[in-house]
Length: 353
Image (tube, rainbow, N blue to C red):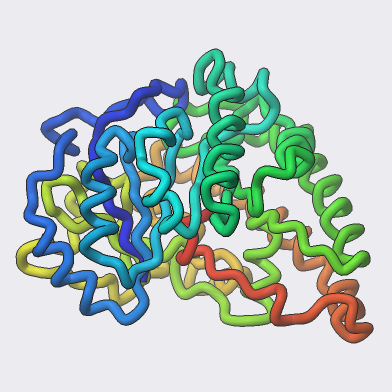
């Protein structure tokens, strides 16, 4: 199971689509629970993955050290903006399996939303941690906004040769409503088609580019589909707040529906992780409901939710359209069906943007 451990609600950036730090009274900036309580819960898990989360988790790097020292049998990862990677000693980076680094694509796009100079710093961070730990997997964690060009941003990140995988989230949950439909029709969907063509051209050469929104759909087709949000929210993944509360979703820090328990008394996973709205959908095994939070907190209203849903259905159909070509490549032995397996929960990534 995936354990998202929030080390602090504080962040050292204030990205324009995020807002920066959580209020201290909602997500405390220091961990208040005893690590032994966390250890007792995690040790009951036969295959735990711990991903450090925030805020910016490295602002509390001492707690990260403590968790790694006390839970040596876990698999470790971190979601970070990359500005503070040198705070964590090299010996601890060598014990981390996966690092998700926040970067939105080309420098001008990234710095517009995350702050001037952040692009260069995250590139330096990726090089640094790869040098310290050559075995670490680095994942580009993108936010796609209304001025992003999905093809240009993703290709740019691929060509850097610093990231093993790439995933993105659409800026459609936290921000004020914008003309998403026109942008998707004229920019995003055409860009996805171009990107998918690039992906298929590489498949024909036996190379699987780990673009997670593509690989995640293919994995669901050839292997096991998703019974809930692919990130595992509430059924294969839990979030431990810095005050010891246990939630189904790391974003839902204020919402009562997300409460699963606490570090002292244990927790109960969701029995029905797929929303009712999605249970009869033909794409449910590929999508799993997309995002638990978006269902529970539809800030753009029902109409806006459906608009996003329709665009994602178009993207899923687009990926599924390459299945005959993929079948032929598998038949010819150019790629293996086992190479198309991907578990997003293990990396805390998003399959459905």
